[in-house]
Length: 69
Image (cartoon, rainbow, N blue to C red; front, side, top):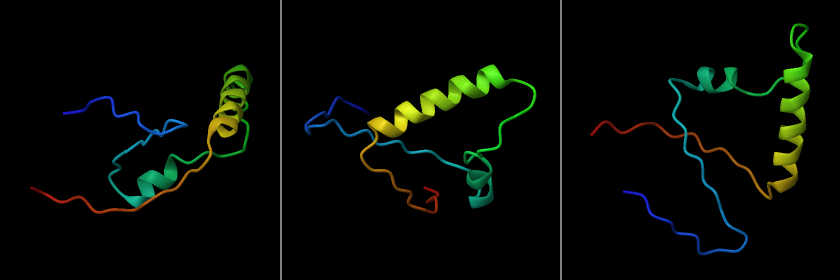
């Protein structure tokens, strides 16, 4: 069903993700509040998030409804 279709420069990556509801999606969004129990994990994730932001040229969200086939 999927094949390598890299044809643009820079490469374009599209991530399609399904959620049960808009509220479910909102609950997965990043929060800037640092947890008190595992700062090492938080710091590593924060560094990786910063790197991802450096690499990302554009980001957008489109809300769609599923079509039951």
